[in-house]
Image 1 (cartoon, rainbow, N blue to C red):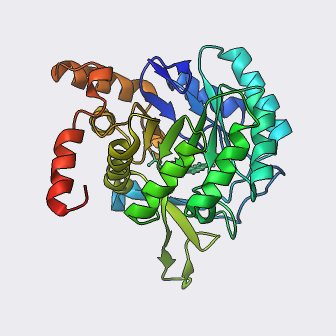
Image 2 (image 1 turned 135 degrees about the vertical axis):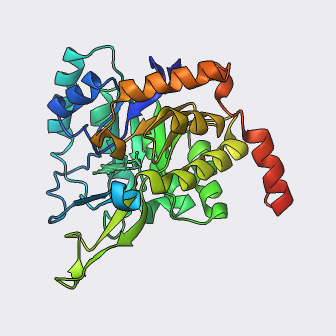
Length: 315
Ligand SMILES: Cc1cc2nc3c(=O)[nH]c(=O)nc-3n(C[C@H](O)[C@H](O)[C@H](O)COP(=O)(O)O)c2cc1C
């Protein structure tokens, strides 16, 4: 199906930040069967990232992982070379570059450089631990999002998705999504990590993560992400493509995201022990059992979700 302007062979893509930091990582994701790759977020200047530890995996114990990488990246010029090497090796796998900055000009500059070598751009206004004035701070302000999206859209010729933060109330979320679409976004990616959250090591009496706080990903994020996908789909579904992300680790998760209104999904944390190929195959089998095509599944639960919202006075 066509997603974000390119043909995707199945609905399961690689989420930003997990394998797309450089060409070898992108090649690993492609060899694990990703239908598309979203790169690590790139900023106007290289960033070293936060001090370690940057990642704790508590999926088996507590149902989530937490990370505070701090957007480490080599800057747009080096990343453009990495993306180009990857595309030479895997021309059939679409690549979308995730971009972030502190102001609309910075976003536009990074997006312009990377759009030359990629199939599209994902605007990251949703990282919960990027620091003051960046990430989710920008993405919680509908007017700031509108300015960023306008600047990016007018500086690139490729499809643009805006990655939403889950860390806002329902009304703000819908306002942010609406402004992004009004400013020209072709798609919305829902969602980035939840939080930030805190975890303490009792022996050191200190936060476990080097940055102190981190974003929550994995299975615990899935119900929040699904609800946001469904809310955005009901509000704007006819005007924009939606890509669901948060806690996808099996075919059942993908089908739920499709039924909530997503056209496709991304998988991040679950790449620890699942391949995109396996999850895509499970999705295909479950859709067959349900006698639905990929296309027919999209939004299949929205009528009954809307009726439930009406009973709560929210629709
Ligand atoms: C280690 C790690 C690094 C991440 N880095 C980025 C990033 O650079 N940019 C971004 O937009 N999201 C980033 N994310 C968020 C993921 O793209 C995704 O939105 C989130 O993890 C939820 O999906 P999941 O539950 O499948 O992991 C990162 C997530 C993890 C776990």
